[in-house]
Amino acid sequence: MGDTSITRRLAAAAAIALLLLLPAGAIPSLNPNALWTIVHGRCVPNKQQHGDPAPCAAVDLTQGVERGYAVLKDIIGKSHYLLIPTRRIAGIEDAALIAPDAVNYFAAAWNARSFVDKAVGRELPDDALSLAVNSVMARSQNQLHIHIECIGADVHSALARDGLKIGERWGLLDDPLGGHRFEAMRVMGTTLAGHNPFKLLAEGVSGARADMGQRTLVVVGMRFAGERAGFVILAHRAHLLQGDIGGGSRLQDHSCALARR
Image (cartoon, rainbow, N blue to C red; front, side, top):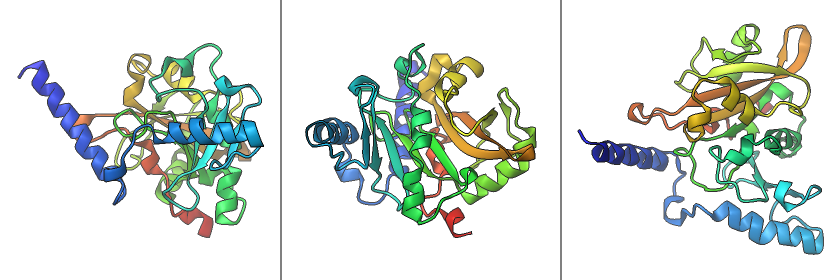
């Protein structure tokens, strides 16, 4: 079978998988530049001219537009927010995310988790909260966005079981998450300052730097032995021929069942 035929099969598989991920009614209005249009065309100008980030929940331009970000309520879920850079960055594959002077957008996203707390009406423990970036195949938008949302209860339970086995270097988790095997590592601290998951993936997982677009990243707050605060960073590579498009955000729960415990 020729390379062209294989490429077509992969593209078709990706397209079908993406359609299955989309909510009902979203397909006719699919616009891959919708997030960029909202942030660049409305939120940033409104913030600059009137001090109002609307329709975004927040816009931070303290370091300028090239290093700023916006927080926008997603149309899906009560507690689902997105952190979006105010400069043009397509997604996880963009080299700007692992440059020496890269903005740590994951750190900014974690600092914005209070929007989830407000949406569910209570302050959630850190291990109920998560951040996720999807692979090229699993996203509908061509502007980087980090999903800020509650983690799924099943993932929460699996990480609680495996927590003591997660080390400071990447290694495969014992339990599948969402039906797929993830690599995991831990970092310590109450914030992600000094820990950029994009760089940790590119520098620590074999082959990742060469195919970042095939990867998905998920970060979950965690309490390790002795109740020390930290994070579990999860990474996975898409495998289209196996029907796996690398959608880490599927580990999140838009109903936030953990908030009702």
